[in-house]
Image (cartoon, rainbow, N blue to C red; front, side):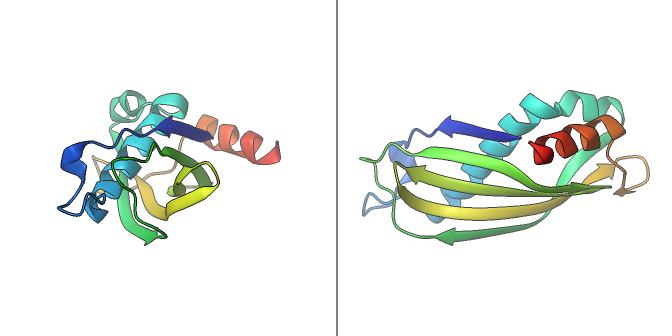
Amino acid sequence: MCIELPIRIKAYDTDYMKIVNNTVYVRWFEDLRTAMLDEYFPLEEMVAANNTPIISETNIKYHRPLTLNNKPTGRVWLEELKNSKWVACFEIFEGDKVFCTGKQTGYYFSMETNRPARFPESMLEKYAAWIDD
């Protein structure tokens, strides 16, 4: 349960020093997380069950600046998935240079009860199989 995507840095992603603004990484994390959901547990399936993923915490560590000249790749993988809680890890890198790492914690959430909901057994089994590989 790992996804990698090329990241295209746009001029509006940078500040006056041509360095990627720190807030842009959060958007890239969302793009990566959405791609992972599309691959393994589409949002449409969650919404059909009247559930949705919610984020309770995002942590980011900036290791070095990215500029318009870089051609980074983003990677996301699930570090934890149990009951209703999930933890996703992120990395923005180019070759062997890591520019940013991060982690998001969240929950599978019922839109009916406004409380965490248990992940479907099929999703928990997919994750367990991935961990065992």
